[in-house]
Each structure stands twice: as structure tokens, then as C-alpha cells.
Image (cartoon, rainbow, N blue to C red; front, side, top):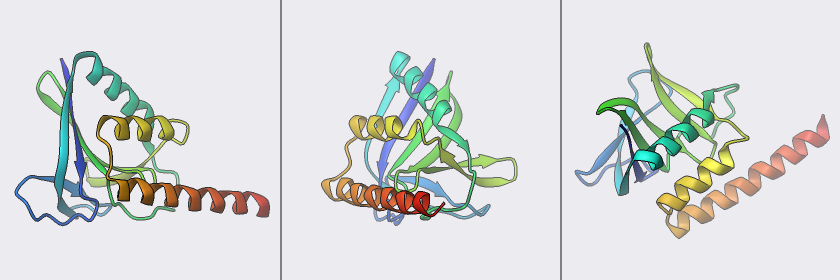
Amino acid sequence: MKTVELFHIDRKCRAVTSRTFPVLWFSPGGACVADIFASRTFNGSDAEFLVSLFKRAFIRIEDETLCGHYPNYGLRCFDEGNLTLETTVCLSCANWIGVGSDGAERFCIASDVFPELSSELQHLIPLSPTEASDLQRISEMQHAFREQYDEND
């Protein structure tokens, strides 16, 4: 049976409580911990849906044009009790951190799946009004940048 644990974490990546989630960085061995604001656990068909969404969303990164990694969410996926994925997801620049055989690697979230993933995560555990406003502002800036870039091509 699949289980998914979803965490809303402090994107400032500075722990002040004992309830934390690990945040890996792009460089191997780089890590910090973030406070957990909220969490939910999903089993059965809900977990299966989330795992399938993550599989479609998480792809190897194509470029390095990222804001950094200031994650909004952490998640753990289990299959029959075995941890199969532990990662953090940054909705600002649509990336996540995975662990390869040689350490931490950064991946991006497929652009065609990002809106669905972002919406689903925020539906399951809503962000604070400030975080939601910040994400909206960042999204608008990225959209304007893409439009300007497309005009110059």
C-alpha cells in the first residue's frame, strides 16, 4: 500500500521548533531543516493519485535559471512502508530536490503539470495568505519575463 505524507514547511529554512523537515540543496551534503507548519497523510487511492502526479511532474532540470530553493512543501512517499521519495518542492521556481547516488540533485517540475501540482498541493494544505500573495507576484513577474523573452526571439 502506498502512503504519502505532505508537509507545509517554512520556506525560510530556519528551524526554531523540534518539528522539522530536511531540505537538501543543489550541492551534495548541503542541507538545513525547516519548521513544519502543517501536515497530512494520505493512503489508498489518494496516495496513488499523488504519487502518479509527482511521477508526471518531476523531471530532470533543463537549465539553471532558478530562484534558489525556498520550498513551500515537503513530502515523503512510502510503498509497503519503505521510503521511496523524500523531497521538498519550491513553487516559486518550479523545482524540487532529489537524492541521486552521488548526493542531492535539483530537478524541475514539468511545465504542463506544474499548475495542477501547485493547485493540488495548495488545496490539500493551504499556504498562508502572505505566501499565496508572494507566489502570485512571482508568477506574474515570471509571466512578464517570458513574454518579454518571447518578443525578443
